[in-house]
Image 1 (cartoon, rainbow, N blue to C red):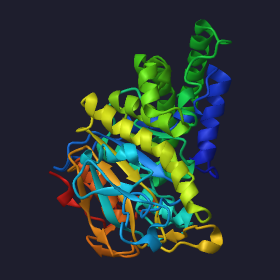
Image 2: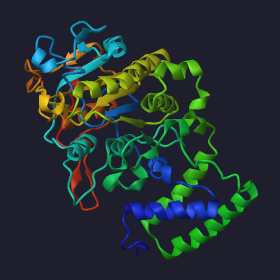
Image 3: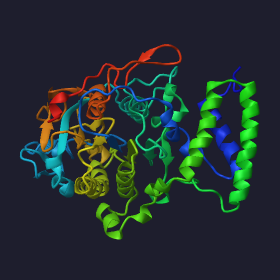
Image 4: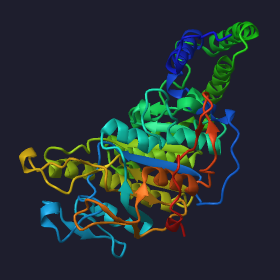
Length: 433
């Protein structure tokens, strides 16, 4: 018998969160899912890159590729106010807003031939994060959830999937279940909220309440032999383990020297990148950090300059810091966006650019990826892919390959439908070396 016959996944999560708050004096909602990754045994790995973890930097809104990583120096009608500048990698140019990024491009592979079939924000973001088209009949797992499912967890206590400043709808476990959802973090400076025993609850009271909850749980489980109920019993166990973990300090940016924090910058995205570095150093498998504001329909050049100002310092610092601490080879750093912007400049929209899924750019660095190279080309205006087309599904398969995950493994949904981490995508193996 199902004790939640009409409840969806969110209702179950709210139930557990409320119960935890009432009985234990803690609020576990931000930790739901991420702390239960060990429930799945890792699938046998395929030979691929050297990555163990992923830092996924999501540029929400559609980053203009021609103003950033696919500039066209000889096309003033396309470039407008943007100028192309040389980088530390021969033959790789970027927009002039990215001066610090230019200094680390010898560590980065630019994919200039990305292509998506989705030109609206929600649909484009969804397929980028899940490899599947948005449908009302099913919720597909996010990429981080797939990585947890296929690769298991590294740290026995910390969440395996963390999302910083990200949208919950693109960080869920989908049909894999809530235990594969991300641990959601708002401000990186606040860390993992409500992960400590409340000051109003003494250790003695906490232990007593936990014992009482155990007795109630045993009675409930004897009456309802349900897999969902069992999963949330494990949640309590792992939440308690996390609360007592010495590595919970991985979420505390105050542990970092001021010089390091300043290296990244003071903005929310910048500090999110620093938090991501701390988390992968401590065994978190997949960390997503979002930087929004790239939807530059109006006044594109002012918008791009502002977004690049925050991205530029943080990204360059992240690549430099990971290399310095010896983590770049086993960390794949991804920069992704749902689509690009039109080469055509809309004068009537104060020099804006519209959505453009036909061609755009994404970045990969570390994890066995070749640095200082470009893959794929677009036509002289940046409007169409000319060579080496990479679909969103191919891109996600390449991420899986960098982690040595079996991208062709089929997982059956509860409705007995087959799914894979990258659908029909295939990895771009030429990027590895």
